[in-house]
Figure 1 (spheres, one colour):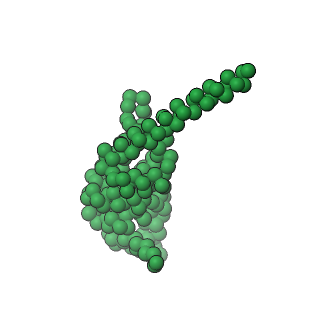
Figure 2 (cartoon, helix red, strand yellow):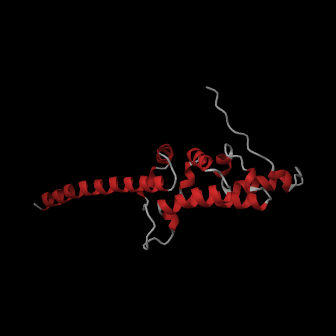
Figure 3 (cartoon, one colour):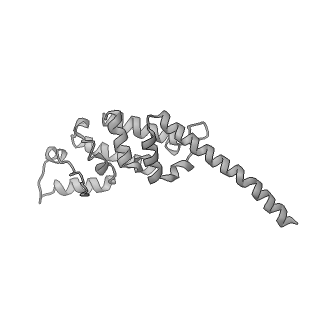
Length: 176
């Protein structure tokens, strides 16, 4: 009899849990759309990072780190990093996010910020970042970028920082 009661309770809780998940998905989509994303952007992000749906959608008083919410993370990446720091147009910023959706993870956003800080410290102007190749750079870890810069400036290669700053990644082309 106890097992039957437990099964009934579980069956009653399952629709409630499904409803919460659906509401969470709807709320996450709403937050992304409010922050300037389009349906195409949301689809690209969800196909790469479905765990975004499980994050808390909005910043509230219970959240200690705003980057642990979809709202805080999307504002940080879209508005702070791509729009303010890199001075990308809205269309280009969305294109970068579609090409590199891991930016909308806490780790990806923090790594991107560190990579940009490293490049800016080398003297790279924010205007020189080329949007089609930017996802290649932003998907690298700061340690990889630092090792690459250290290698290029070593005694074997002897590139100056101004020369390193002008190096652009080559975009990947697919032949189809």
